[in-house]
Amino acid sequence: MLPSGRWPSFFSRVAARLQWDAKAIDLAPDARAWPELPDERRERLIALLAGFCVAEDAVAEHLAPFGDAANNSLVAWVLFLQRRDEQRHAMIFDRIVAEVLELPGDTKDERRDAARAHAPAGVVELFEERLPALAGELAAGRTGVDTGIGLYHMILEGIVLAAGQCALLADLDDGALPGVREGVERVERDERWHIGFGLRCLIEARPSPEVIDDVLASAQDAAGAWGDAVPREICEAVAPNCRRRLSVAKLLDPGAAAV
Image 1 (cartoon, helix red, strand yellow):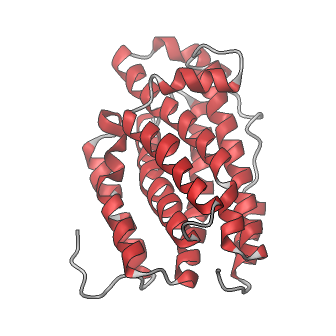
Image 2 (cartoon, one colour):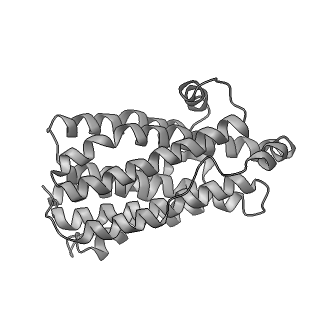
């Protein structure tokens, strides 16, 4: 159980300020520009965007048990707001794969199946195997919310999605796909408060050293889940962020060796 307090209200207000409409972003210029991009660039972008399509849809589906596991109505409310964000993220990436990449499928589920064939295997494993398994453990009461937040907020959002967002924003800095870039920028702003909220939850929960060790062990390889789609320099820049956040939050053993 997470302690009560006023801090969830802060994140609730942040979520309210960052609302946006995934249907309102204009992707028509992107659809026109897409066929003109070099093949190598399109291949790299397909891997990233398909990966986000799979990841965000999985998150929107499997975040629900986290609120119940928190056993705190205020924290559960903020997690509900976060899930609403993730549903919006799933919508914009579904639009991108449908309208820009033109992956086959008449429904969101069919397009996600098509995206899975292009997404990096490491991303698919984390979001379609590890995350659902953890959500099931939370729902059954066999693991604690601190373990769930450690994986979801610190690893999946804080490392994996952050690395993918950095790669996309760097690739799209030339304005070639303005609608896609706008969507990724808005998603990235949402994820910032999600990660901050997750870290605050861990501070309140005071997880065991074993939980923290598991998070750090996962963080070492998480950025590499994208394979060649994310440049090595981005992986190397993002990977240490988990340790930095936990250190700032005073959740690390001062004598623990840096990785």
